[in-house]
Amino acid sequence: MDKDVLAAIAASSSSFSKGQHRIANYITNNYEKAAFMTAGKLGIAAGVSESTVVRFAADLGYDGYPAMRKALQEMIKNRLTTVQRIEVARGMISDGDLLNSILTSDMEKIRMTLEEIDRDSFDKTVDAIVNARSVYILGLRSSSALAGFLGFYLNFLFDDVRVVNQSAASELHEQMLHVSKEDVCIAISFPRYSRRTIMAMQFARDRGATVVGITDTETSLVAHTADIKLYAKSEMVSFLDSLVAPLSLINALVVSAANKVNYDLQSNFKKLEDIWAEYEVYEKAD
Image (tube, rainbow, N blue to C red; front, side, top):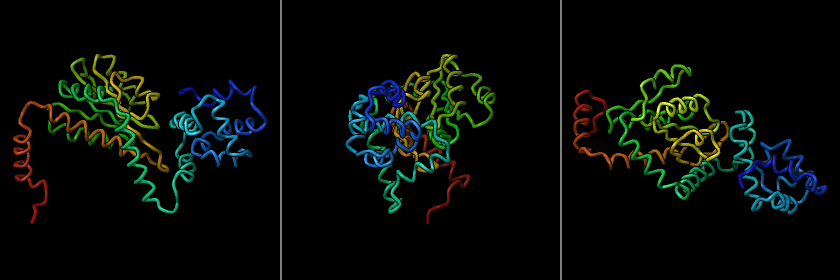
């Protein structure tokens, strides 16, 4: 069930019991907190029993309380300010062992990404990269690290890979002045989604380029604007975004593209090793 939780509450409010009205009022006024509460904690906050909360979710049409909570989380991902993220994170992460909590959560996001990835879309993305005249890579703010990583390695494989640098909106378009139907534009954005990334995607699409969106959910504007969509799970960790799963997906794209390149990859890297040695790029091993 994908509909907005607040819309579902509004549509069903006339049939609520007294306890359900308490839950509805709490969620409506504190949805950024409720989205990360267990059924028990939400019950305590609203002054009702845990079982009443579970029945409330079912009465709204959700397949259990976890499904309603997930719908709430999807709804607010792009609404939370950094200050709200820090407040919400206190209820998401155990203070007892932050290292274990965060690393375990990251592993879970990779597992979920692997289980839910659309293999056909992944293969289409690899083909689009390999067959493109030019590869444009968009990733602003927290996603700039992912864009830079992808561009760094694709530059070893292809002649014209351009990481569009973070700058004013008009300068983004200037960097993409020559984008055309022969090119692919890979846009990376996770909550909170970058408005300039969406604008640049539309610019590339209007000029006929194949636009690939790497994002977290089909409800994001990145997915709505892209021709090919790839989803990787992300999560708020206090004021920052966990982008481990998207990075793992990018690793898979680079290796798959390398396997499809026609020239001798080993020979190409042999030339690079000679250059790196000549110009002392790396420290020599003992």
